[in-house]
Structure formats: C-alpha cells, structure tokens
Length: 401
Length: 194
Image 1 (tube, rainbow over the protein chains, first blue to last red):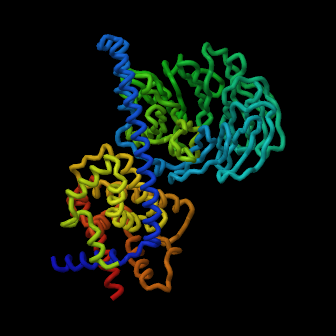
Image 2: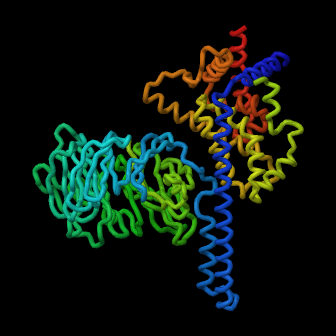
Image 3: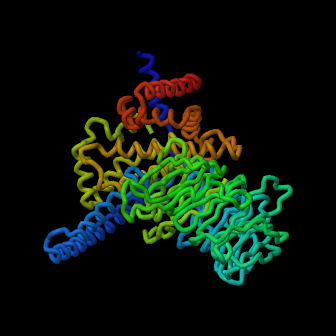
C-alpha cells in the first residue's frame, strides 16, 4: 500500500510539473471569449423574454376572443407551442467535433459552400450556389450564377466555364472524374474535367443529373441519367449520344435521381413515392418501394434505401432493403408539421445516415446497424461566419470519401 | 508549478466553498457577468490543464476548454444549482479532449505522420522546465486518450475513482485499472530519471 501511495505522490507531482504552453495568454484570450459569449447570451435571453412576453400578450388576446377557452383551433396552437419546445434530441452536442466516420461533407447555405472535415474543422469555399464532389474528393465543382468552376478543397481556383444561363443542377462523373454534367437554361450540358471542352446533350428538367458508376473505368462509356422535359428518366452515353433507355413519363414530377455506388441501381424519387430501377431502366420491385415519401437516398452499395416519410410516430427514417423489407431507424415521435426531416445523406461507408432536422436546428447521425443516434445542435450557427445567429439551416450536398 | 499550488486550484478541495459556488451559479443564471467571470477564474486553469494533458496540443487544449465554457454558458439555464459546477464542466472538457485525440489519431494513420504524440514544436530544449514537461507528456503519450483522461481526473482534478466512474459512465473496475496503468507509466518514468 505504501508503494502505491508513493507512486501516487510521484505521479501527482509529475503531472503538476507539466507546463501548459502560453498558459497566461490563453487564459486571457479565453476570458474575453467567455465574457463575450455570456453577454451575447444575456442579450438573447432578454430578447427571448421580450418575445415570450409578446407571445403571452397575443395568446391572452386570442384567449379573450375565444372566450378564455381553447377551441379546437386554439388547441392546435397550444400543441404547436409544446412541440416547438420539445423538438430535437435533448443531449445534442453544441458543436460538431467529429463526424462519426470517415469523409468530408459539402454544405450549402446562403453564405455559400462549405467543406466540413471528419475532425470537425470547416472551410468556406466561397459564395457559390451549388456544389458537387469530384469522385475522390480531390476537387469540388461549384456554380456561381451561369459560371461553373472547379476548385480544390482549399478553395483554390482550377478552371471555369460559362453556362450561358444560371446553372440549376450539377454532378461530377464518378469514374475517372473527367466530366461534369450540369443543367442550365433548360439544357443538359457536359464539360470535360479540365474545363477545356463541352457539349450539349439535350433539353432537360431542372433535376440534378446522375452519372452511372462504371464497373470497368478503363472502358468507361460515360453513361449519364437525367430527367427530360416530359418527366421521363433517360440514360445516355454522353460521348456518342446513344440513348440506352428511357422510361415512360412519371405520373408525378421526378425530384431526384441517384445511382448506387456500384452502378447497379437507380433510385428515382417522384412526388411522394420512390422506386428503384436496374441498369436497363426496369423497375426492380413491382410498384414503389415506399409511399408518402418526403425524401430518399440510396446506400452506396445499393443494398437499401433510406426513406423519410410520415409514419404512425411522426416523421420517420426507414431503411428499405432491395427486397422491400422496412426497418425503422428513427422517429421524430411527433406528428406535427415542425417534426419534418430534410433529405438523408449516407456516409461513404454506408454505416451512418446524416438526417437533417431543420426546425430543431439539429443534425442527427443515425447508425444503420444498431440505430445509435449522435445529435449536433446549433447547426445553423456553425455555418454562420459572422456568428450573428441569423444564418438559415444549411443543406448537405454530399458526403465524400 | 508546484504540486501544492495545483492543489489550491481544485474546486472539490475542502474549503472551496460549495455554497459560494452555488451562489455564483445562481447569480450567473440571473445575468451577473461578475459571477460568470468569477466562475471562469476559479475553473479555467484546471480545465485548461486537464485538456492539455489529454490532447498534448496547446492550441487544441485552449479551444476545448474555451468551448466547454461556452457550452456551459449556453446550458446555464438548465443547470441544476444543487450540483457543483466543476464536475459538470470537467466532464465536458474531458469527453471533448478524448474525441479530439481520437479524431487526430485517425487522421495520423492516414497521413503517416509519425509525430511523437505531443507538440514538440512547443518545447524549448534550452529550458529545463519544458524538457521536464516534455518527459511527462511523452510518458502519457504511451497511454490511450481514455486512460489519460482517467489519470488526469484522478491526479489533476482530484476526483475519487467512484466519482470518475460516475462522470465518465465507466465501470469502477475500469477506472481503477486505468489509474493503475497510468501510475505504472508515470512511476516508470520517474524511476528512469532517477
């Protein structure tokens, strides 16, 4: 026992001898930041108290008009207030320290395009409209009005082309990364990955096109799927112009198309349903794989589809296998208009799904195997460069490699 | 810094004044900037030191301790005044320090960076004190961040193994074994020096 005590004393002394570099200046810097944060909180609290007071006055007035009784409409208001308070995960982290698995996120908000890395560090690439990863994450394709630019992840400019009209949607080819497809002025165009040459494929709807990953990149044919103005999904070889297949017009507007990483399955989200097609444009399952769909995303290996839809327990995130079997991964637990999730995004390894929850100002990372959830709060503020708290909730444009 | 000086910083040490601290938290919750500054003054050094001893990176330690305070400020309204402020803050600091170290380790595997696990650039070999710090840091670097966190909580923040188990949600036996392993490493370093 005495030896242990001696060890403890020596260990404590050794740790006490460690000098923390720049300790005093660090303390002063931190003091200033903490005091400023506290002052800001006080201002927010005061504003919030004033707002609550205003709300109370308004509600009191509403109560008077309604004869001090909650009518069915009044009951809805009461429910709405309760739900606003309870939205989101209680134990969410206030800052995103790490992503739960490897890769980097491309994030878009009104300030432009950002890269968020695995270690939580982030960089604003610039005041761009939309963005797409190159296949290995070496570059980012960004649009700025009618201009398509390629920049590296540090934001260094590489090349640009003029689209002639505002660019509405874009996708960087998934094989060797030599082509970028984009929609501008109602036309689908393809530019080579050095910005040197370009061509027009044909008229297209304002839906992001999707390059079909090739099983053999050496013999790449550069198949590209897109939505034409008649609301049909078309797959074309962009170099030769040969059309491989074309579906019948969908009954509801196609909102997104997405190939699985192996190029074997194409997810089509149209209106409130989602369907999967094979490499010939045939439906893999009879009918839609899910209905009442808000958003859908296909797993990188094509084995399942993440679906956000209205369910019995509020808005739900469900994993639907290629055989149609559904597993509920997460539920908002509230059937209100505010309990709505944004589009899910798979991690590159398919183990996690980033589930945005705009009204709760949270990102939820949901594990696809064991349903673990890691939540991050204050998401809008984390992409607010002037930290005024006026930034809107961002969108995730991709999670790459 | 002498070990005795460090001891004076401990928020859980006898005489620290838990009632006084509860009063400070109450005042801060009511909007008193002076109370917040007093809480900062009392808790910054141990929090900063704890973060540094886990992450071994001065800039990251400053960020982590700073963010922990800001996080605490943002959650101040929900804080239960009957509980001490220090453990709440330290838990945030230590967990974030572990997360940061894990993330950096993952990056290092990819980049092939063979740095020795601490910020060598921050060491000045001409200063004996810094060399001494470097030795302790190098010895700690042999431990995983989870082990380091337990050692730091035990011998810097002076929590009991039971308190550490509760704060880090670990089995008591795990805490004890990590403390023992940390002590072995530190004792080995001291014996090697002498």
